[in-house]
Image 1 (spheres, rainbow, N blue to C red):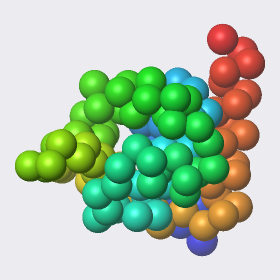
Image 2 (image 1 turned 180 degrees about the vertical axis):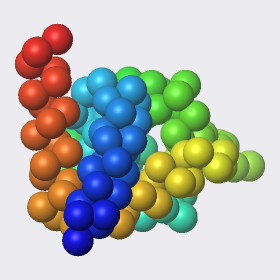
Image 3 (image 1 turned 30 degrees about the horizontal axis):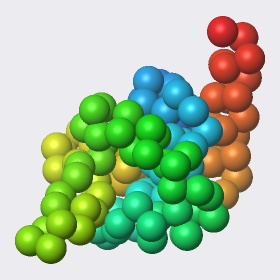
Length: 121
């Protein structure tokens, strides 16, 4: 049992640091969690805004930031529709995969740790 607790802490520590580095706003964290639940989706800004119940204008900067970090990617089809999806690099896929494995309580603990870090900075 002790080994399991140690592995859990190490995994969450790595995940915590990745989240801390890549989600500087609560909206960025929401987007990362959204894609952890829907890792293979390609969605428009309008669809994402409706799913997260937020204004599109609020999402633009958060999505742009996550694109710059390589977590999301942007594609434009022949009709000019821009969609967003997870980045293809292995580190992003592993990061999102680990995040998707967390249960609700584990995710809340990470969120509280991130909030606490933000207050201390």
